[in-house]
Length: 156
Image (cartoon, rainbow, N blue to C red):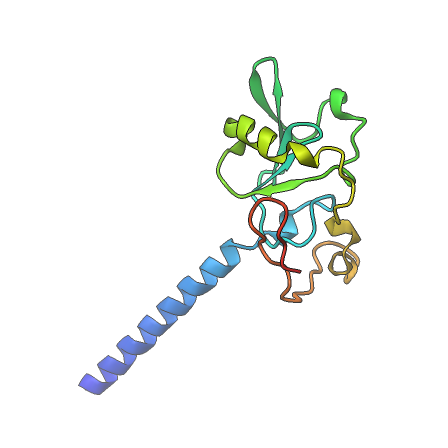
């Protein structure tokens, strides 16, 4: 009887660890929520910082964050003042830290050198994006690294 209980306990503990590991893996990947104009090569992105506009995009919430009249505004689309920018060709820096816009001076200085760059590959142009006719049909090729969290240093 003790062996049966010990065996049952081991199986329960094993399933518990497996379930926890699966949750950790699934939480860290948000490829399907990244827009087609987002920078390719990242399996996770919390925010994009766009130095050309000095604007952020909150990937999970799908909203832009921009400074206007002394405060940060959150919106599903950009206001008219940004209409001349093409999101597919504007350079994006991946930022994986909470509320980076509150440290905007740091990001503006750190990534100001990326203003005007147009050489970044976007998800829309990746083969994985089109494999099943839309961005929900990802093929896991195992080469989508997180990079260094700042829009460069990709591992793909």
